[in-house]
View (tube, rainbow, N blue to C red):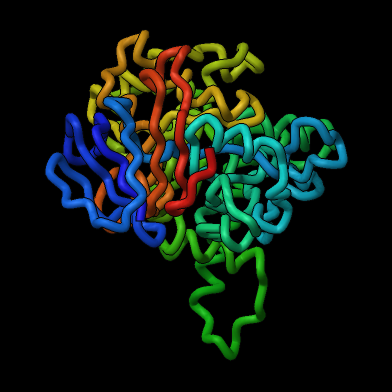
Length: 376
């Protein structure tokens, strides 16, 4: 058992505890509070007033399948052969030895979502992983955590250049709709009459609400198209990137969708990112929209996630919302908030002790625990 004492505990769900103690036991958080009884056999670490937070969560990355220094051999992000590759799983291509995992944990990021790229209308299933562990099995949290879809520029560019469909947004939506209608018909059949199809099986999981649809959409019209598809098929939708989100705040609030905003620490890489700004997370959060901040790593190197939150604070996001955007909101988006995203008894012992405020340029982890094991 490990006892971190005299910390400034940012619990996320229960406020800030001054001079608090947190007990880590068997990979879980055993106690949190200002008056915690410390067992005699505990290893005591006095953190001397340092900020202590849950491990941060990046809810949208491509680390491990789009490796920074092994191009093209380390690029398994996009299967650009057919616009519907729903049968794929990101987890089957992740190199858990990719250096980005080390970069992440050294920056206090202990959990990531890894997704196929956005070349295809249906990209495949996303995975949630811890950023530290001896084996892939130890790191994997959920290998089927959502169905990646893409709207906007990327599918029409990729397949337009091949003289294939989709070369327009109309065709992208037609392929999306066709996939869900086929899954509807598939599910109507009995097990005996149904001819197994892995592609349709994965779409059916989203159709039945078993997994969320993770919709790549930057531009306002593409975001609204994704919401329209959600309403047509009663999907559980997360809007990814949401670059124009600040332009359609009321629509997003009314739709009740969760959003993952980023990459914002980048240039205007394409037309649909024309309105990129660090104002977006704060504008949405202040309106009551659940917002996670993401890097889309390696688009923005994953270690800069806390800096992205700091930039959002500079542009108006509150400190409380910025912390939520790196912890409990992404945990909810990834459906792991029962075990991650806050300093709460019973949750995984993913805990970070910071030398300065984590969202300031000088902020750096002094101690990082993943599943109760000290990594940094």
